[in-house]
Length: 600
Image (cartoon, rainbow, N blue to C red; front, side):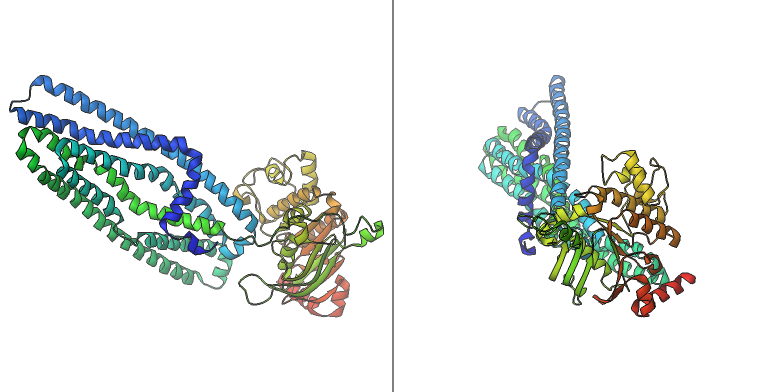
């Protein structure tokens, strides 16, 4: 879906109305309560105005007994109006909160097929802003737009008809003109939608800039770039301030026009009522009530004025939600996923099936969307069942890209990525995810206990199974230990070991069990000391699980079955640890460099 399909006010409102059906009763109650409340607000002025007109026509003083019924009537009208206002807000917000949940679920379902690759192009902070803050902004439509929009038609129409009945067609026409002016003034600035989009974009840029600065704080400090980043933020903030000042000026002009409308409108209606008074002095009560309609309907248009500021922001947020959700999935799922059994296992001998590599890349070429340089160029490698291989190389050489292709975050541009002899594109993402378990450097930790985090991978796991996973990952904290938000109460090394333990639990649930799974360790032990890292890899090797290791600490790779060295998206060396050291090639250079850094 193109961005143009998401432009304009009406397409956004129509899209939001599709969700409104799920809360029809609550919204209908809110609308009815608002109309009743607005009509009662008109009556609060109309009742005293009528009584005053009667007294003036009668030409006598107000009797003591006449005052009490008026006071009681006004008091009752005020109480009922307050109740109606409460019901309007209660029902409107109950509907809004339930519908916002519907929008979030709808958005999540459309982001899942795009994840995790979508974070590469959009940025995690921007996605979070859209999924949380922008969805919050659509509350203004459900809670503060639908009911006011209906009452904006019903209440002015009702008072116009009443003016015609009480004072005649000319005053009714004057009331209609004043009502139309009240509805039109809040929308006099045609650029408000663009202003709201620009403001929201600058706010999102600010959030993304702050998030990126904090995420890259080590680099910012190392290169003394704090002032430079602060200057960039100040520039964005100044643009935002200019935008807000422009919007403030336009709001001030609209508010002034609204005040002028009330007093000029009341004067216009009063002048239009003069013929009725000239014709018959007894029409005075109806004339006073007609003039009071201008003041009694101020609340109807005050809400519209507020919406002129808040609604464009909500509709701009809706546009961003739809644009984010409309992104195409990075990979296309097969209509009929292939069987996850080893290729041709039905017709091949057990020995042939066993010899099929668990993971294989055949002449793989790949380039990230929107980038010029190819990430992988003609890469071929094999990961036999039950073995371990390692990918090493300088930053940007293509190591993590291979891991992403094996997980099917992307599909290769050319060549094939196979699991048990089947292309991952034919297996489908669900089948690949069930067989490939990943532990990376920055694994996510939920705010709970150690057991809570482990059971994310297997909700039915027993304490014995959890303890087994912790033992395999060299994780020693008790299962009931709180880890804090994002693992703030444990160290970085403990967080990595906890994530690895969770990954092992998930691998146990792969079709066929642990021995049929593929374990991808993407810098998953980078925060461990060399001895702990070595013990962890030895334990994993003892499980007989098929393991793909992406690592920078090359001295810990002595026991892997094969090492592939990558440079600029191609394999430049491969072999066992001792062979590569003896060859004195690129691997030996990387090993010498990492050893020198460690010695410092």
